[in-house]
Amino acid sequence: MPDSTALAWSWNAQRRAINPSNAEESAIEYLTPKGERKALAYSDLVDVVYRVPLRPRDGEARRAFDRTRLERHLRRRVQALPAFIRKRFSMHLETLDRRNPKEAVRWLFNTFERHVLRRVDAVNAQYLPQGNLPAILFPLRDDFHLLPWADKKRLKRLAYKLANLMKSEFMREFDFRYEKTADVEFSTIYAYGAIASKATSLNIAIPGWKQYCDEVLTAEDALRVIARLQKEKWWLGKLRKIHDRWREHLMIATSYVSKVASPYCSEPCLREWVAQKKANFEYLQAMELEDQDTGERTSLLDKVMGSVSNPKIARHELMVRMRGFEDMANEMGLVGMFYTLTAPSRYHATHVHSGKRNDKYCNASPRKTQKYLCNVWSRVRAKWGREGIRTFGFRVAEPHHDGTPHWHLLLFLRPEEVELATDIFHEYALQEDGNERGAAEYRFTAKLIDEEFGSATGYIAKYISKNIDGYGMDGEFDHESGKPVKEMAKRVRAWASRWSIRQFQQIGGAPVSTAGAAAARKS
Image (cartoon, rainbow, N blue to C red; front, side, top):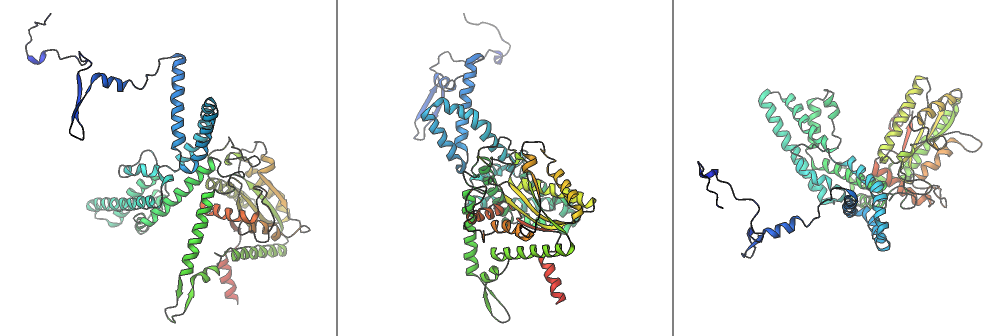
């Protein structure tokens, strides 16, 4: 029956229903690239929308639906892992799929999601930029998320973009503030704060930022820092460091660095270190130094190999300094103590005996573990200072099989202070997780140097040699990896280079340059 309702205005009439009267009616018309006109019916659109099944409301069907969807998500995450860690997990999943699909699903839920994926996401979060990126940096967000996959060309391109952004942003902020205040120094500091506050959101340490926050940064220092932020070379160095450490950290977290896989450092890390050393050697070999007055020339390589950059000379210098400490201690009537300091178990990615995954792992990098050891030592040193205990000696940092650092310290103390100093060290060494199993046995050890079994220099000589070039240790095997010490020495140096960890440090002595200058003045 037709509607005969009288309406005041034509637009008061009811509109046509959204649903078509016929599902075969044309819904969308479009032109193909060849110029042909085509149309999609409503029935075609319905098929597209409901091609993905709807989630059931409740019951077993809903749980099965969620489980299937999560399984698909986890399989995508396996394939989305960076190539350098994906191969092992992808091949393992394919093997399980061929053998027993149900077992493959259990591995995805019980192992990959609970352990592997959790570690990968936690490591990524330590290197990714902050979530609330400034507007000028937001276009670079994807570039930072893809840093582990980046090659040299991509890193250079990103460094170029960042340098240009910092330059243009500084000029804009400086001009804006100078126009209002006509104060050059204030405008410089203000502009530095504007660009540095944005750059810190990239999780990159910006020089001068702490001084700026403490309101002690001068305009002159701000200009020096700004010059760095506007240089592509500075950003490239920062990006390379993040790229290298991010990749290595992922390999540590996924057990690619362990006694059963690759002790101390990953295979890519070792290859890159060896390649860099080779490139440096070839560059030095091709360069010469020339005296502008006499025209005399000498090989740059000879000069470098005559310095502590030569591992042999570095080892000699360390041994001479240690021997000098020992002779001084003997004259003063001091005794030597050999301490070993190890981080709690949660800093270790894998177990030392089996090489299996450590479920206590807190996703710490070797750099973070080194910081923990430094904090423990600073508290011990401060307590010793309050108690009037003075010491000098040597410290060696070396890695466990999974790249986690630990320390060996050879210190000279007055005989009457040895017991108190050791108790203080023991207290601070076990302050964190001191009640865990094995802490009393492995976390801290103290040994009195017995002259009958060897000198103090002899105690430390082994650790100096095995962490430089393995000199004098032919035929000896590393107790953690079970491999020849000479082979492992390269891995240890590659590990120290990747994480910027200082392997050797004298405690309580003057630097070599200072001591050499004093000796020259006396002579």
